[in-house]
Amino acid sequence: MSFRLAAYAVCIEDGRVLLARHVPPEGESDWTLPGGRVEHGEDPFDAVIREVAEETGCDAVVERLLGVDSRVIPAAAARAGVEHQNVGIFYRVRITGGRLRPEPNGEIAESVWTPTPDVARLRRSSLVDIGLALAQTLPATGHVAPVPVGGLIRH
Image (cartoon, rainbow, N blue to C red; front, side, top):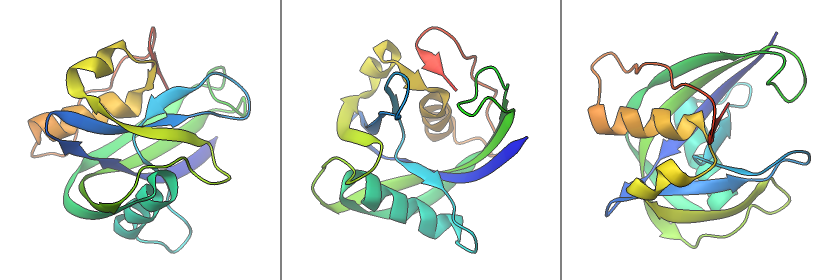
C-alpha cells in the first residue's frame, strides 16, 4: 500500500469556494481543493500555504484547522494500480493577495471561485465534499462521515 500525507485549503468567500482543476497526465480532469503532499520534515500548516501559492498563484493565511480525513483507495481505483491511503489535513484558509493563474509545470490547469451550490454539478474529488462538510459543520471531533464515491465524485 502506498501512503500520502496531504494538506488542503478550504477557501470560502461570498458564497463561493476556490477550486482547482486537476488535469493528470493520463485520465480525465476533475475539480479539487488547492493542496497536496506534505514534504518530508514539513509542517502541514506550512504545506497548505505553499500548495495554495504553487497551484493558484495566491498568497494565503490559515484561519483554523477544520479536521482530518483518512481514506483507503482500492487498487482498482488508484492511479498506480496499488492500494493507497491518503490522510488529508483540512484548513480554513483566506486568500490575502496574488492573482489566480495555472500552476507552472504542474497538473492544475486553472483555479476558479465557484458558487457553492454549483459544486454539486461538477466532476470533482471527494476531497471537495469533505472540505465543504467540515467548513459547514465544524465538528468538534474534526471528522465527518466518508463521502460516497461514484457519479461525479471521484477518489
